[in-house]
Image (tube, rainbow, N blue to C red; front, side, top):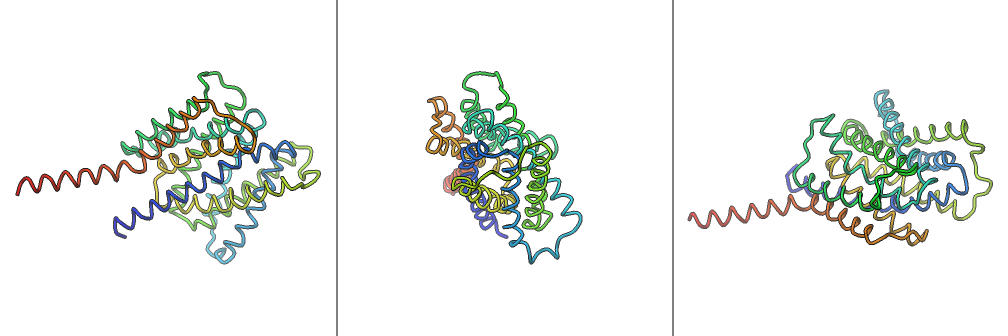
Length: 309
């Protein structure tokens, strides 16, 4: 594959990952409203079982390729994903959807640190600069100038840790296995663990009634924010880097704030808007500065060649 085609695929992968952040960002306020109507893990169980059924029909003709190693690593990936959703969803019981969205974005700081520790991957200078911008923005969005963490804050940060681990594991496993089978096993694992947790710790599994909002909620969260999102994430991460994926995912808290405002009336302060601007600056720096630098060096070389003629 030529360098041009490889770069084109990388940009397409980055764009698709960004569409995932839009769906994920929209779900914070939707889930917060939903878990006010039914238990947390019951909601997660139904959400991920619906997504599993959808994905089953995607992989039905691929099942002959499944093997024990894929199942084992898919389950492991699913357990990590379950923990990230468990902490995130319970956090929504304790604080605003907007704040949870911002704290989830902390994975942009954690991913390159974990990659450096466990995989000896030094991030590019542009990625490191992007991380600095994004981390500063997330701090301004989530902290409100205070270092005191409440229950919702701690749960949101734990969610970010497990999302970071999930990004790195997805980067590894997506290059080893059939991505659709891997995603199916992963999502089905989340459904099973969520359902078991609900049956053990919660008073009921099914809601007393499925009103229009709950039906809408399961449509958005199961079809678009789960089945579509994780197939795209698993596929796209084959063509981009974990650090860049984490940077793109920093758009999630911004979209969470957008939907939180229009659907739940949650308002950002001026400090928050500045933080959002810094996050997008980090994404742009990481995404486009390498290409800009290459063009600048290419132009410099041309000038040098002309001067030497």
